[in-house]
Length: 232
Ligand code: CA
Image (cartoon, rainbow, N blue to C red):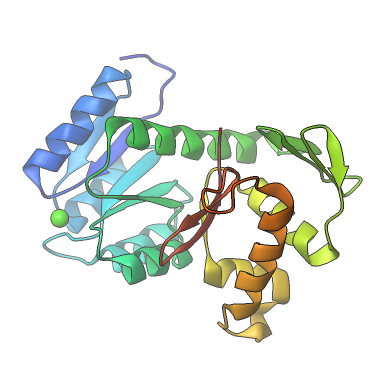
C-alpha cells in the first residue's frame, strides 16, 4: 500500500461485489476499509479518516439517500454511489442530495478506477483553489477568463447560454451533472424542472462541437440522470 494514496471506505453488503471492488483497489495500491451496513459506514467514517466513500444504494438498514444526507451534515468526503441499472431516479436523487458521482452495476475495474481518479482530482482542486483559466479536453478548449471556445485550434462562436452550459460542464470535468442541477445553475432556482429548454440548448451546443452527433465525443449523455463532460 502506498502511503500517499487516500483511504477509501467501501460500503457494500453484497460480498461478491465488495470483494471485486477491494481487489480492484488493491491492484492500484489504494488502502481501503469496508462496511456492510449504513450504521457501520457512518461509524467507520467517524472513527477513521477515509477520503473517498463508495456507497451502495441498496443496503439492508438505511437507504442510500438518508446516509448521504447524514454524512453531508458534517463531511465533504467525495461520495461515489454504486447502484443497479434500473435505479435512474435514485441515482439522480443521490446526486442532488450531495453525492459526487455514480457507478452502475455491473461496472469494470477500469470504470471504477476512472471515477476514483476524477473524484481525487476534484478533491485536490478544492484543496488548491482551482484558478486555472484555460481548460481543455481533447481538441476542445475553453478560456474562462476571456470567455472563448476553441475546437481543434479554431475559435468557434457560441451563444452566451451555450457558453454558460459549456463552462459549467468544464468546471465539473469528468463528473456527471444532473439535469436538475444544470437547469438550476443556468436558469436559476425559480425555473422549475422543465428539461425541454436544456435539451434544445444541448443540441445546439453539440452541433457546434461534436463531429458525430450520434456518438458524442465531448458531452456524454447519462441516460435518465444528466450529462458529463468527457475526461479524456
Ligand atoms: Ca446492496
